[in-house]
Image (cartoon, rainbow, N blue to C red; front, side, top):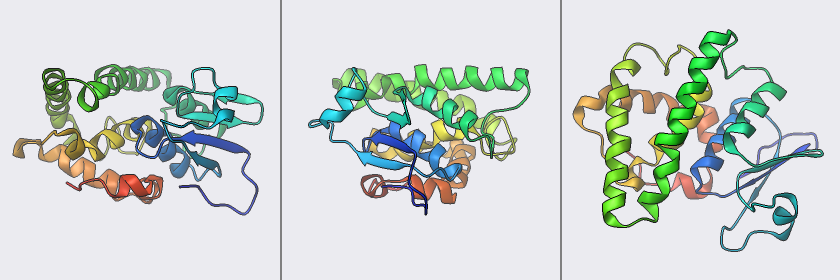
Length: 209
């Protein structure tokens, strides 16, 4: 997948088509209508130039002129500051700090344990699924109060939450009927044009809810 535009892209994103970390960066690009050349990376056969650019040889990796960034959250915040409209982080320091704390929680409690579901043994996978599901159920009542998480506007938190929610069926996580606020929240996210355009062909073929 690549964003379209009439001018030559000044940015390049190395992205794996099924990677949730890469997906959240692609959502930010789409939400802000940023023109970028998106290069699909095969994890088993990464391009040599990626290793030259990034000693860790990981994705996502963003190239903006002479700048190379290879951490998803750092890339997302960089894009938000580089292209400030529409803003995805709160303006006031208190709300911004709260959003960053929640983003850190998502990073540590969700994204860091995804490999245990996809690559770990059955016991570790079940434990990781339960941790994510329990966390979602705790957050569910909060989602009934506003259109989006902690806000009435689509924000950076949605960019990080949406890839996880989209992958719940693939992760083997089934929401109970009591999680209706989460289901409705997910539908709002998935219906956005930016989310639809962020999907790769592989992600479009994921089992739907």
